[in-house]
Amino acid sequence: MQNQVLNPSSPVISSIAPVAPRAEASVRNLPVNLFASVMGLSGLALAWRLAHDSLGAPAIVGEAVGAFALGVFVLISVGYLTKLVRHPQAVQAEFLHPVAGNFFGTIAISILLLSAVVAPYSAPLAHLAWTVGLLATLVLSFVGLSRLLKGQVDASLAVPAWILPGVATLDIPVTGAHMPMAWAPELNLAASAIGAVLALVLFTMIIGRLVHRDPLAPAMEPSLMILVAPFAVGFLAYTNIVGEIDRFASLLFYFGLFMFAVVAPKVFRRGATFSPSWWAIGFPVAALANAALKYAGSRASEPLWVIAVALLVVLNLALAVLTVKTVRLALNGKLFA
Image (cartoon, rainbow, N blue to C red):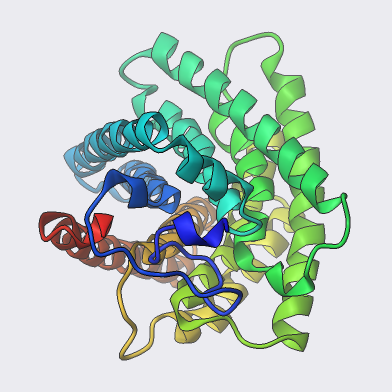
């Protein structure tokens, strides 16, 4: 019953139950995973800021991308709030779905990242956005883990999207390390603990499912890139908490880079059909690019700078293509069909 109201382009497992396509275009079909576009664009803006600080890249590029990310967030939020008002049962079904429900974490992550994007322009707005994102993230992480602990969950549902609550919680210290509130440091530590353990446990479960069960449906293959996020985001969170890049941070970075090398050929393949689920690649690559720029800056190593710049180029190309294709889908009505 729940699958029937989900957008066919949402990154759910199409092999679990067939989803009947809708002929008419309607905001009812707007997928929540489209908020992943805001995550990728915000991550790109922050990466360009790092490139400006370390490589002298034009500052206007990062600020322009950040403004675009904020505009996209407002646009999608209006659309999804309209869906909530007009079709609350569709939103409820999406939230309760064992796979699609995890993508509500993309909303919380988007708010957290946008708090960092707007911070240079309005500290009060950044503090408010970070607090809202923090609360939403903790609630969603609690709900997500509570669902799993009810038991009798089909092991085939352990897909990369499951890891989003853990990644979201790690994004709290990534974006809030410099928050001035007296309670912020302890919450950053708490979020790091929750996110790290959740990510580790869920990553293990997902790898087990990928090894022992059928391969992911083709529409879900882009979500494999999410497996990079715990290590790239974990690197950023850990270095923000401890204030330096030590050997453990290096381990996180290099394993994230290794995971990218493993999953990239499976994701970036010829003949892949575009859908909004492709936005799942944006934030993990953005997080890895940010981590690479930060790590290269600490080591002053030419090969590391090459890797960092290459990841930034890949990120820009990927998000440019995704943006163009998504706009085309929206203009021809297929995004809501």
